[in-house]
Structures are given as C-alpha cells and as structure tokens.
Length: 211
Image 1 (cartoon, one colour):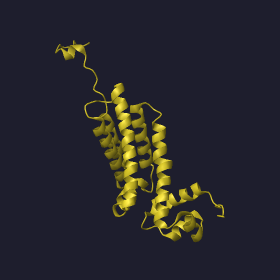
Image 2: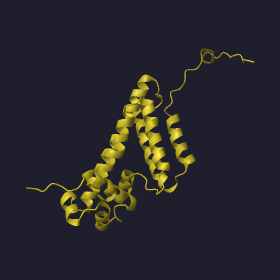
Image 3: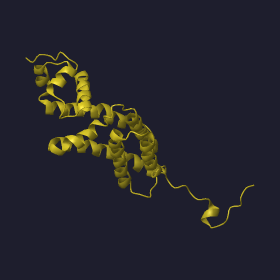
Image 4: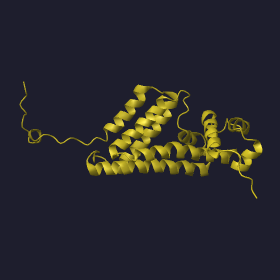
C-alpha cells in the first residue's frame, strides 16, 4: 500500500515554479529543487519523476494558476472589457517584475520547447487556448458593435496573441512603461469600432461652427 504524501503538492509546485522561473530550466539543478521545495531527493523523484518531468508539472501548475485563472476572470466581463482587463493584468505583472523573469510560458517556448517536441506541443496548446480566448472576445465584440469589423476576428485574435508575446519578451530586457503601454494602447485602438459619421458629414454638407 502506497504511503500518503507528507507534503502539500500545490505548495511544492509553487516553490518549483519560482526556482525554474528564476534560474531557467538548464541552470536549475536537482539540488536547487531539493533546497527550494524542502523535499528529499527520494521524495522528489518518487512524487514527480526526473527534472524534466518536474519542470513540465511546474509549468502546468503555473499555467493553471496564472494564465487559465486570468482568462477565467476576464471571461466574466463584456467582450471588449475582457480584452482590456487581460492586457491590464499583463502590463501590471510585466512592469512590476523587478527580477525581469518574464512569463514562464514564454520562457519555456524560447528556452526549452525548441529542443523538446513534447513540451513544444504543450506550450503550443496553451498559446492556442489564449488565441481562442481572444477570438471569442473579438467575435462577441464584433457582434455587439464594440469591436471593429475592419479585420476578421481570426486576424485580430492572432494579432492580440502576437502583441501579448511581444510585450512579455520585451519586458525582460526593456521593461519601460512608455514602451509597453504604447504597444498595448495601439493594439486596443485597432479594435475600436469606427464611429458613425454625422449625417451632414456623410452627405458632404458643412457643419456650421458653433461660436
């Protein structure tokens, strides 16, 4: 009969996330993980497997507690508001990241997934989920008139995903408020539905200036 675990898995995974996130996958040693999690080597291997398996579980934990949770919160808002709230959180996290760790998922895409096909599929699936969130918001916003129809919903969703990735990468080396806020502001402006022109403008008539 297997012995019950004598530790809280979520707490251990939180510690592993911070360790991998701070040092990166390659620079993190099993000794680092033992020190940060408080587990013995035997307990770590028995519960989570080798370093690669532990990293993937830590990454999944990060995705669920950060990205999935953010999307869940934002889905409760109106479509345009959901997109704005999502990026407001991204800006807050990026500008408040004093250690310039960036996003653990983006770091995984750049540092690990390129050499690991299974992890590459994992990361791609999460990115597809974020794109799907953007597409749902854009489609609903185009239906209720709060988001422009000048571009297809698919193109706008892909653009928002690209903006998100760009902001998270730039934040690691140039965490400048004007830079990051400017990128997001421009992306949100592109979502704006064009206002209906006054009838006098549409007909070519001149609107008298009010003195």
